[in-house]
Each structure stands twice: as structure tokens, then as C-alpha cells.
Amino acid sequence: MIVLMSATATTSAVGTASLRQLLADRASAAEITRFLDALSPQARVEEALTVTGKWVGRLYDAMEGSPLSSIDDLVPPSETGVVIYEGRNSLPLFSRFQKRFTRMGNAVVGYNHQTMSFVTGPGYFIVQPPSGEAPAPDELYFDYTEPPPGEPAGWPAYKPNTSGLSTAVYGNMKDYMRRVAKGVVVGKAFKKGVDQGAYFSLSRAI
Image 1: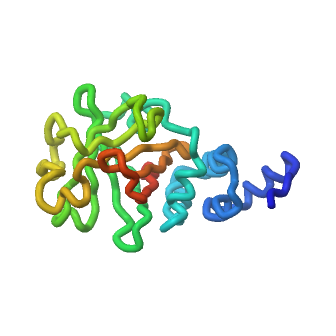
Image 2: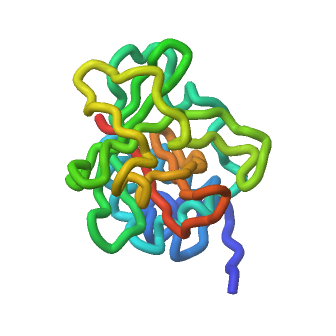
């Protein structure tokens, strides 16, 4: 049952909530964004990381209609170095990771920094603008099917995502992203357009 609240009561409830509680209460995308935007950058990271398992998928669903407007939202043009996002995926094990981004000419390149990289490979990807095509025509996406234009200095050696065990993890994959709040996004993985039932959140590290 949905209980209607006054604007004052809603603001008060959001102000004392947690992201997990907001998801349990089926809060709107606007309420979730307002709650996280009111936190300090570090508190936003910590709050996003508390959302685990199926709740990461709940967050993605809750933010429907809130795609990133451009790649610049993720990595501003003024950034000349490496931009790190702390990640949490919906898997029961090995759920913590980082995605690291940098600009190379006109492209924004990223890779996955995590404890199993020696097995899976670095999982390089290119950040692409919305394609206008299914399965998520309006959402920015991470494209694992395109090789990077090069290897940024200090990054792991490039390994094709269709090579060895990398294929099972990153092969033919595209992650579609939705904006949650300042420095926070949530994504869903597809392979060859097929929903993988795998979700993750990213929060910009401080």
C-alpha cells in the first residue's frame, strides 16, 4: 500500500533514511537523488556501497528515466588524469571493484581494477554516448566490444575481451548506465543484447 505524505513529511523521512531503506520503501528516483546529493562526497560513496545483491538491481530499476546526459557527466573534459569510481556489483562474491577512466583524445577509456584481474584480464572498455537502439536507446554505455585507442601510461597491458577467460566475463558485453546522483551511477550488463541479470553501482572516489 502506498501512503501519501506531505512535502514536509517526505523531506524529513528522506533526510533520516538510508539508501537501502529508500529502496525498500520504493522511493522515487527524485527522492533517491535528493537524499544522496545532500550527503558529502565521501558519505555518498559509503552509502552507495551499502547497497548489495538484489538491491543493486532495485536501484537500477528505481532510476528508470534518469540516464546520463553525456559522457562529460562521468568524466568531465577538465579531467586530465585518472578518474576512479568505487564499484559494487550484485554478485554474492567478489562484489567490490573499481572502474578507472581516462581521456585519450576524443575517447574516454576505462578498465576494471579488481582482485581477480590476473584471471579475467583488465576488461578494457570505451564509454559510448546513447546509441538510440535497443536494449537501452537513451542510456550511455560501456562498450567492451571496441578496443581502446591505446594503453594509458601505468595501466595494465591490453588484453582482448574475447581472449581466454576474459570472454566469459567481458566478451560481447555492453553496460548501460543510469544516473543516480552527483558522482553516482548504476548499470546493467547485456551481452549481444541479452540481459545478463547483473548490476553494479559506481561512486566517484574522493
